[in-house]
Image 1 (spheres, rainbow, N blue to C red):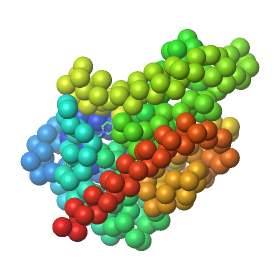
Image 2: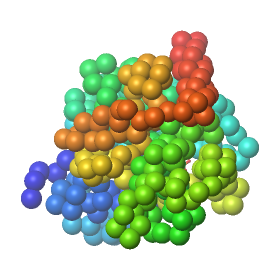
Image 3: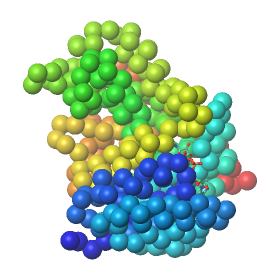
Amino acid sequence: MPEPIRVVVTGAAGQISYSLLYMIAKGDVFGYEQPLILHLLDIPPMMDVLQGVVMELADCAIPLLREVIPTADPAVAFKDVSAAFLVGAMPRKQGMERKDLLSANVKIFKVQGEALDKYAKKDVKVLVVGNPANTNALICSKYAPSIPKENFTAMTRLDQNRAQAQVSAKIGVPVEQVSNVIIWGNHSSTQFPDASHAVVNLSGKQLTVAEVIKDDSWLRDTFVQIVQKRGAAVIAARKMSSALSAAKAATDHMRDWFQGTVYGKYVSMGVVSDGSYGVPKDLVFSFPVTIKNGQWSIVQGLTIDDFAKQKLAITGKELEEEKEEAVAIIQA
Ligand SMILES: NC(=O)c1ccc[n+]([C@@H]2O[C@H](COP(=O)([O-])OP(=O)(O)OC[C@H]3O[C@@H](n4cnc5c(N)ncnc54)[C@H](O)[C@@H]3O)[C@@H](O)[C@H]2O)c1
């Protein structure tokens, strides 16, 4: 068995973490042979609740879980970690837009960027889940200059999973038969869920989703809106934001980052833009990526029609505005 790796989860007393911690501890992310030490960060008023989570993790009797360190101190939480799940933030409530969250959350990610810079391993892989995830990831990376900016990512995998589930339900096949649905841009209602490059495996043959569904207006309109508004629909039904599915998506994102993507398949991640597809640089923007040896690369050469160009511009503009607001909040 290899040596245990240290993994931090912030917002560890919250509802996403309640599902996520179990998935990580039992090996879904780093493999079923990799022992772990879990660092759990939350704020001081949540320490009693966090103790309850620690008790439950012990009661799960998970062989890979070697130690659990609950703390409210970022210096302890980020010490020597190889992976960071930054979940802790204020969740979006019913009727609240992501922009309302910016002011409350940007400051948290500045502090955590500084702590990562000071205490984490220099090759730490950081996934930001807390909203607004893309801009939080950007701010976090700015305050951790000693860690490569490629190591900071934002989660759009839940949107990808939602999109993949909608397409497979429409066609009537299991989700695993559908791949390469893309989420472009921000993890917000301006995101562009794009099925124009998606493929479906039917009786051993790979066909495009468009030729199987044969309904352009569904793909360009209904599908896009269902995925964009799925988070709000879950909140309306549950009176709380998505948690189980968010935890599953976080494990999918980190597993693929650590273990690589399957040849010919790509996944969507919020990553720092290099200007691909005309997206402004220095934004954390969701692109289709492939991953090898722990390094992601943006998929190049996809055809972007005028409809898609317009959608990419809308979500890119929102991210530029968020970035400006975030910088103003921090400098105020
Ligand atoms: N990217 C996505 O796809 C996606 C999906 C679902 C939810 N989210 C976001 O994830 C975040 C967490 O959601 P949740 O439902 O678990 O919320 P929650 O309120 O149940 O839990 C959040 C936890 O974070 C803690 N926290 C707050 N500030 C902290 C800090 N400075 N350091 C450490 N911990 C801190 C809180 O005390 C709480 O325990 C929210 O921002 C939510 O909007 C993102």
